[in-house]
Image (tube, rainbow, N blue to C red; front, side, top):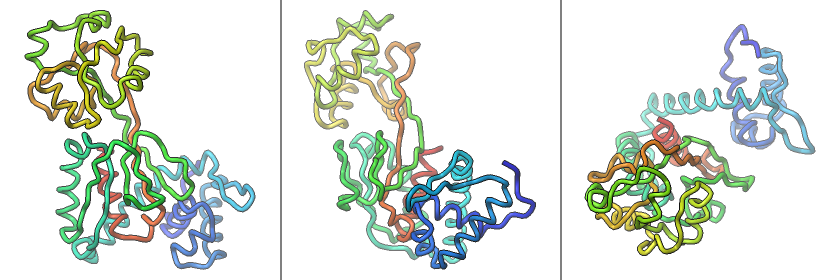
Amino acid sequence: MSAPSEFDWNHIRAFLATAEAGSLSAAARQLRQTQPTLSRQVAALEADLGVLLFERIGRSLVLTEAGADLLEHTRAMGDAAERVALAASGQAQSIEGRVRITASDVWSAYVLPEALRRIRDQAPRLEIEVIAANDIRDLMRREADIAIRHVRPDQPDLIARLVREATAHFYAASHYLDRRGRPAAKDDLASHDFIAFGDVIEMLGHLTPLGLPLTRANFRLGSQSGVVAWDYVRQGFGIAPMDDGVAALTSGVERVLPEMEPLVFPVWLTAHREVHTSRRIRLVFDILADYLSA
């Protein structure tokens, strides 16, 4: 893909809107332009770059490989341009209304606070409601405006951005390990107590393929609340897997089997497509994306 001789933000904006809306007509409505105008701008960008950015399948436009590659770069540009526009007009300070964010209870308690401070600094008149829930709240039914999930949603009216590949390890309180001994190998875990996060059978379904010699007998304590289960770990009741970032914020715990390969899980930031037309939702979405990507 060759770089255009002159940068035209209008062409980039047209491409970005079309890629995220999925059609020229929807993008034209979003940008308040005519469809032919938008089509010419996208075509001009394709001509400048010398590549095909979209393929038409039925009534929908599908990104080509070159288009998908360009999208990752233009999203960052679009987010930056939006923030500059808000800051320049002073509108960030005047944006108001309620935005509901849903995340697991552990992430709500440990990960989100710093992001919430940034939101408050940039838009002090916003009302933020955090829905701390370990089930998946339905964005289509507007049970929340923005969701932080570990699986990508497949509903066509939702947009999702992969913001992080997070890692996790096993952790326990130092005083628990002082009392019960520090495992040196996976086989040593068979004699230890574990804390269940939710359903034990489901948890074993994730842990057994890792070669861990665990059975239901290892899980004699647990909770549907991730915050409660993690506090049981902190209080010395046993071992549990935890996001490394959360563990780093928790005093008195240490990594078990520190040489073990980390558990890796995706973090998706998801919202209804209204994120493009609601400035308060877009502002919160962008701040969360920046924070979680860091």
